[in-house]
Length: 303
Ligand code: ADP
Ligand code: MG
Image (tube, rainbow, N blue to C red; front, side, top):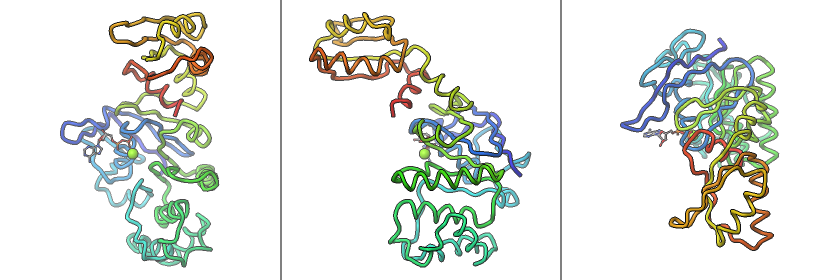
């Protein structure tokens, strides 16, 4: 059991379309699911984990429907973003309780706690754990039944750099073992460091897929439009248009704003603040002004 297929999947809540006709395949190794907040990452992960039914389309693991298929749940472990942690339990009690839900026991719990290197703290109350330790205990709970597929929703949120490194090592190891590991994030750098393969979703739609080089190229090597407001739009426009980062500028005197077409993203984001500082121009607003995927990509790069 290794490969999740998402075929033309949509999911809506009332009239909110959270996931819009997405198709992708997630196989062994580490995959990053990248997208800004509200993109539909959690909705997608919950459908892959069997927590949520698709409104239309199919989510399958090696051909078997995941939703309401108990036999399939045995092959999937899911680490949700938030979870009641029962602070009054010890880490071991919490993992054992989860093992029992799978009809397993203390031995499997012990193994899972060893995998996440939490034996040293397993008899302390969860209330005393750091964010990283809680995350590892949640992960042990997701691993008690030794699933082939591990899904993690924003696992790095709120972690310090050391905890982040530890979790990255662990996920890398699991991917190298041949498991299918998928984690979501809204931070490109995080995904780049860990994922051999990246799937991008933006506003419910599948926007791109590939390795980090391809994704970074997609996000940066194309024109971006910005709306900029400053204390001296004319002086700023004159300076920007003289620089190769900028292909065109419209000065909107009525609105009091510049509409800028940038062609070299990296250079533009470096040049704009520098020129403003050098000329004592105050920047009041800098925002992507088109609703295209590209402008959201630029947001991701800057995050
Ligand atoms: P992400 O995890 O990428 O931030 P989500 O999957 O949580 O995105 O949400 C995608 C969209 O669906 C958002 O607009 C969100 O408000 C909406 N949404 C998610 N879950 C629900 C729900 N249970 N009820 C209503 N709207 C929801
Ligand atoms: Mg989410």
